[in-house]
Length: 324
Ligand code: GLA
Image 1: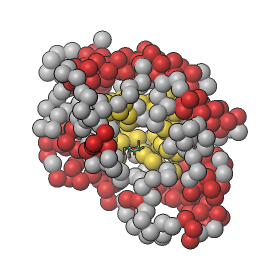
Image 2: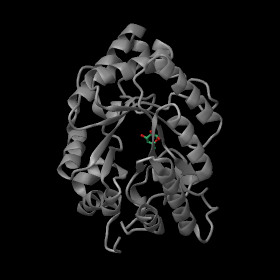
Image 3: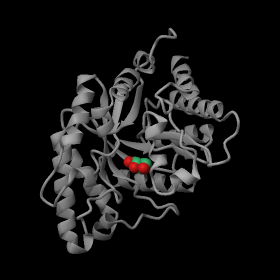
């Protein structure tokens, strides 16, 4: 590796997918953002554009403008795309009021949604987060609109519907707080085991890895990855960012953050995880700065590039880990 090599070149060199969550408006409006995305990453997750809310202006219509722009950008720059996400309880359309519909109408609506979106990107999106965050923090099944209408079977059906339309795609279950071995990941483990027992076409588990305040132990992350792999599943790190509790960051915050990024990358490489996605490109646009009260709870500089788009120590740690 030469010092001039970008992250992407180093990742390409070892067939690792290093991705980032991309914002459609920033990609359109900001040349330097666009350049960073295509120079430094070889994989892309639409940050919002493929979620149900942004995609569905009304019951019977779709707006694929932003999603198409991101997918086309990825194709033009030879980047892979993680489709995120088909079934989730958050970021549903504003007009969507579940009580307006019967259970059967909700089921048909979801089926049509999954099949339309997966079908449109059959040739360009090879990996999907089919279901996001179905497990609640206490390990029970989360009581979402989909769960209320269909019970746990909503997962089975969603994976089957996606698989019908694109049998070649890798279909993932994705969640937060399940990164290391803990109660939540035990519950996710039990859930995916049940899905597999029922013959559901599930290929992998996405560990979001939002390290906010409490960071998971990288050894425990590796152990967790291995137990999912032992079920025959692939594992990816899908939404990584690293923050301290607000007001409690140490003097060497950036170095500690860098070290943690490097340790997680090492855990990935040790276990054969071939994809890690950071949830955003530069600190200025991190979701933590604008989401609910998160900006008061956590430091707002969780990513590999700083506010002025300059590489941080974390950038160098990731490059170092990928080059050894
Ligand atoms: C979850 C979702 C992401 C994103 C992040 C941050 O992890 O899966 O799509 O919304 O929260 O907000």
